[in-house]
Length: 351
Ligand code: GTQ
Image (cartoon, rainbow, N blue to C red):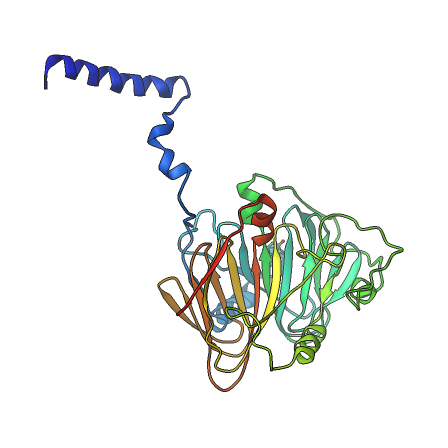
C-alpha cells in the first residue's frame, strides 16, 4: 500500500472514532440489521410440558408460602430470551397454582393479563371489585391497571395458564405497578356480573358506557365455548390451518379482548392435518383437550393436554391431531398490536 493510501485509511479510522465522541454512528454500517428484509425473532420454537411443570410447582408449593412468592408462578422461559426472561419477545406464559385457603394479594400493573384455567375449581379472582369464578376451560381477563387478587376457598389445588404482555410493556419501558394495602379486595360488584350482562354477545347493555380498550367481560366460560363448538358441529372444515377457530371478542368493539393480546380457541377434528401457516405475530398455543404434533420451524413437538407451545413470529407452524379424538387448542397472540401498527402479514403453503 502506498504511503498516501495508508494516510487516507488512518484518516477514515480516526473519523469513525470521532463519530463516537460526538454521539454519531454511520447508518451504512447498520442498515441491513435495522431494516431487515423480513422479521427474525430472537426467540426459538419451544414446548413446555404441563406434567413436568406440575411436578416442579408441586414441590415449591410444599416449601414456600404464597406470601413469600406473591404469585406462585413457574415462568415458561424461551431459550433465546433468558435475560430478561420471556416466552416470546412480546408475550409471557406461566403456570400458576393456588392452594385451598390461600390468597394472592391484590395488585395492579400496566401489563394486560389473562388466565386460562387448566385444573381445579373453587378459586375466584376479584377484578376491580367483581368476584369472578374459575372453572377449567374458562378464560378470565385482568386488563391493564385493573386490581386483581386470587382467593381459593374450595378444595384441592388450582392450576392455570397465565398470559401477559409484560415483555412488550417492558420493551416500551411502560411499566407501572402497585400493591393494594389489604389482603384482598372488597367485593363491590355481584359475582360474575360482567359475564352475565354480556351473555348473548350480540346484545350489549346500553345503560353502560364503554371504558378503556379492553373487553368488559370477566370470564368467557368454557360452558359457552363448548356450546358454540357444539352448535357449529363437526361437518365444517373451517380454516385449513387452524380448523374451527373462534375469536374471543370485546363486545364493545368486535375486536380483540385486550389491546395487546388477542385470544382464540380452535377445535381440530380427529386426524386433522393442517396447512402450514406463518404470520408476522408471536403466537402461543395451549392444549385444552386431545393430543397431537405441531411442527414449528425445524422442530416437531408432540403435545398433550395442558402443554404450551411457543411459535415465534414469521415461523411456519402446522398442527396434526392424533387419531382417536379431536383436539382443542387455545391460543394467544400479539396480532392486535401488529394490525394496529400496520405490519401484520400472513402466509400459508401446501405441504
Ligand atoms: O396473577 O397477578 O404470571 O401479576 C405474572 C404477574 C401472574 C397475577 C403472573 C402477575 C400475575
